Length: 367
Image 1 (spheres, rainbow, N blue to C red):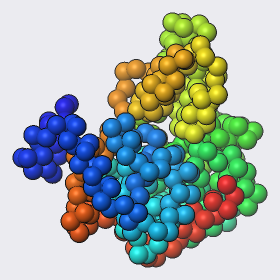
Image 2 (spheres, helix red, strand yellow; image 1 turned 90 degrees about the vertical axis):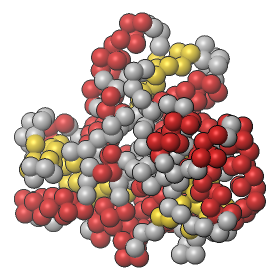
Image 3 (cartoon, one colour; image 1 turned 180 degrees about the vertical axis):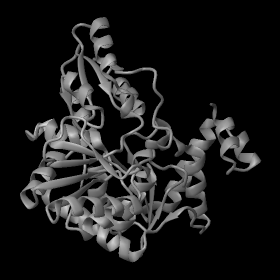
């Protein structure tokens, strides 16, 4: 879909905006950013589209951006080019006098939406009735502020794909069992790396309010929420076999949000930051098939022409919700700020923010 069609679909720009060239769009964004000066910081996630992330003052994965947000003291406005839960985390970690803006409020996360507070509270009742006070909740940062707050209130903490092993090691030192929200694949893959047998993992289905035992019904140490990333779920074992058949000397590197069977077949698995660093330090002539979001894979291929880099599955789309943050949305947000209008402000209520920050701070203290 071209720029004009996207703008018309979103219905948030004027007729004049529809007629401007790509060059003028870039110039107006740059001009607005310059006019706002030190009052503004733009954060961009690595999965963001290239034509937007080029305007970011800082780019990173979830852990990096959480740390950056916690250190932002001077900026009056923080515009987050990412998805809703990331902007919530930024609001939680920045000061009360700072304004966090998400250029498109429809930029959500299907994984985060797979666990709502009512379902998690029901799950906790089920699990504590079965196992008593033996469980610590751990939530991936790809979750809503309400889920982070629940975890904080119940003695738990957040986790990212960068620090998952360290945080889960800590969690198991606190309690005998871990409830891992909301991505079952990151939980399962990390648990296996820590030596926990699959037979000691079960899955909680929030729709049926019951436990599933896909790997055998032993006493569970890890209780995995039945959630997943809609992008990483599409990298399947067959894609690893296909790419190895086509390129026998290729290395496969995937994100741990991919399913267990795919991760086991890969040469390496790690966070977004891990993947970026692996490519940067790889020698010229290396061949890579990468199982993660397409915007990042394409960017790495452009930045490292001395290597052969492809997607592990070329038939999937980029993260559709992340891609909702496009230049027209960014321009609207910045020009609104220039004109004194604050639109699409992300504000987490005080009590939720307080407990969510407890969960996040516990993680940051260990990272």
